[in-house]
Amino acid sequence: MLALGTLAVVAIPLAAPGAELVPGSDAGSPRWLLGVYGNGLGVGGGAYLTALWVAFAAYLGVVACAGALGRRVIRWAIVGGVVAFALAPPLLSLDVFSYIANARLGALHGLNPYDFAPAVIPHDLAASRVEDYRHTTSVYGPLFTLATYPLGLIGVPGALWALKAVAALSVLGIAALVARLAAVRGIAPAPAAALVALNPLVLVHVVGGPHNDGLMVLALLAGTALILGASEAGGGASLIAGVAVKVPAALAAPFAFLGAETARRRARLLAEATAAAAVIAGVGLAVFGTSALHVVSSFNDDQHRVSYHGVPATAARIGGFDLGIARAVLAAAYGLLVVWLLAWTARGGDWVRATAWAVLGLLCATAHLNPWYLVWALPLVAVARDRTLVALTLALCAYQLSVAVPT
Image (cartoon, rainbow, N blue to C red; front, side):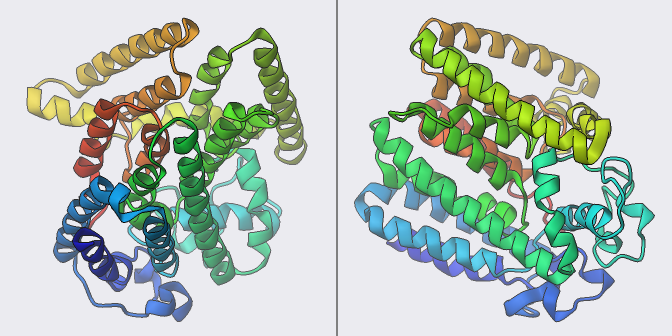
């Protein structure tokens, strides 16, 4: 209870820090941008980072004691935390304005967001707040891009808070699915759900950000739950839906296929995935043309962006050797890991555990790593039945705490 109380108290300045921690407020800080917390507590970058570390330590205590706290207490703690950050202004990132600008390009200006970047509408209320991706066409899947089109018609304030609500509901859905999967796999549900949904990186970045990674993971996890369920219906389609939000979700598909217990189940999973992919591809081509295919290459293009706190850059600094060498070595090691995991799964290994290792390996090997990417791994890690995997993931979370916090 002490750890939970500490986490609740520290969440207040993390959710309501003030305009300094709200990128895009330099273009003006209207009430619609800062939300119900207004100017907040005036917390600076250094104090915010300290609060993050305190919150992370408290979070570890809550996860360790979640079984004793009970499912009901953890459930309400998760709901309270998610709601608090859902009401926060967009924290530490401008990505949400990229989502909105892409939607407005298509719905309001009649321009294909896979052909045109936000820079072509410089005076747009959302596009004017886009920086890193100002000259970049959409890097998101056609399902997500098309789903945001209605938001392009309701105005930027409405679109922003709608996306905040979607991110919050995604994390709540992920927590519920993690608890359900944990029970199915013989794991205590409360610690598993707490590991994911009370993580400060998830609350601050995925909900507070907000980022569409939560939506991608929700579809991936729903597919996992359906595949492991009695009927299995819809599992393959749900996995493909995740890919159509963001490409990295594709990593789970081969493990799920190889992990199917019978040839009949493999055939059903493949048929569902193929049908869903055909429908989504058909709609995407009809609306966006072949330009939508560029999203596949965008993941590779992302590797030209090097994160200072990514594992390759960190290894290069510590070892004193060239970054290119570190990236090549880690990429090769990751390739071998994936091959081994696929072979292990084909021999009867736990495909959920193998997927969790593959996703964590991807986060370690990628040159471009953002703290909200950790939500890709956390739900799978929480139900993987592997303490080493949990420890490594939490270590990577701790290393990412300072990323994107202004100093």
